[in-house]
Length: 261
Image 1: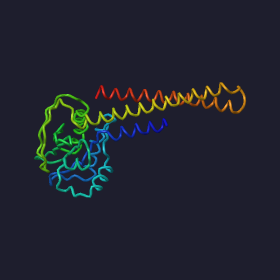
Image 2: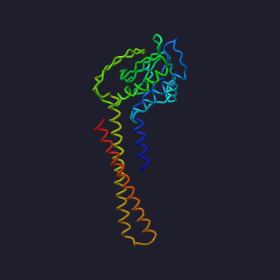
Image 3: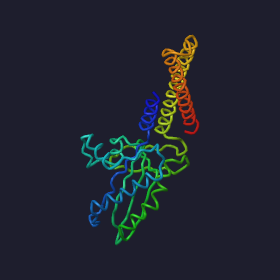
Image 4: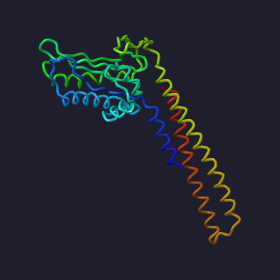
């Protein structure tokens, strides 16, 4: 039973983890001759930086997961905007990056967006004479961009013109987004339910322990029947302790989510 509760807890946390889709960085200028390997390397570095700065309750989609999700929709995204793609991927946040050319230098532009609202949360704009400089820019500036996802602090919201022409809404920066509120509420309720269930099982085991001990008292302290009854009482007591501890931890975790999120 304890394994089932732990499995359910992990599954619950995974289900409500904020999902981030890091789209492939693309070349938007015919004069920029970048190979697929080079653009993928830039994207992989951006994905690594996100994984390094964000807490575990953020799920970063891998390249294989993105390909599988896009293929599963059976939709042509060639003329779609990145916000539309993010919604199709059912991601909470999405990044879109491009490499261009300005004179003799390469330019890099990466944006971090909230999918539901289309709001630009963070941006990297830089230029470099070569690809190595763009890579160093990603390593240097992307942590400051991703860290905004785990900080509740006032920030300027920018209304972005989207290729898909979707309506973009501006929400106050000091008000938690609806997706975050729903996520924390569901996680807290789930932890509370699991905690109460574990305590309920613990109480049941405690009653069984009492029954087995009372039954063993009526038996002589010898013989197979006495030993079996006494062992059942001890097993029930051990199970009771495990479920009491598990229930207490789950309830405290639920309370912690309610208070801090």
